[in-house]
Image (cartoon, rainbow, N blue to C red):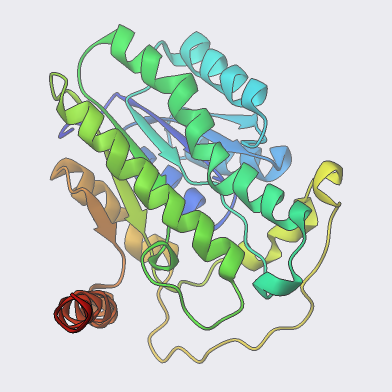
Length: 277
């Protein structure tokens, strides 16, 4: 998808952080923007700021864990703008807890938002994108944690984000088998200054209700990266139809180390096969 002007972008989790930056960058590119977020009032603030700059935007309060609400988001988008060309399944939550100490509701919450959220978006928008014809693109926000599991007590988040990477790759294979007008990418950001760690204040009662993490140590970042720095790069990566979109090029070294460990496992398997037969 190379042309953005006068097209329609839908961004979930768009009231804050990466989502807000993406919504604003889409507006800068001349797109009409649907600002979707579980927080209706902050979403409206973002939409209003876009309108104040001469753009077109609406805010739609949406809980992406609720399939019916995502379907309603699609209906509102098409009623207002008649199309959706760029979908960012960006809403996400996180929590810090050891896997052995985690509870079923912890998993259900993170799965509902971080994996079912993108799937709900795909189900609601992809058929409509096919019906409208022409180019379209879906971006699912995963994380570097969807590629590498780290020692940071975020095992639930990491496991689910691995699922988002796999979901996107599987979808891309399916879309490539079609006419190629619709594509998708997985966005794997590294550490950025956002408020995702605050997401527990919106945890729904059915998942155990709101919670706060309390004070947490913040790693020192001599050159902090902000979502606003990354958003233009994401749009350019979409233009180039990149399968993977990364925010921090230097994290390549982490991936190389990770996959070297995997390849070492194959070497070990070959040795064991020779030893055991």
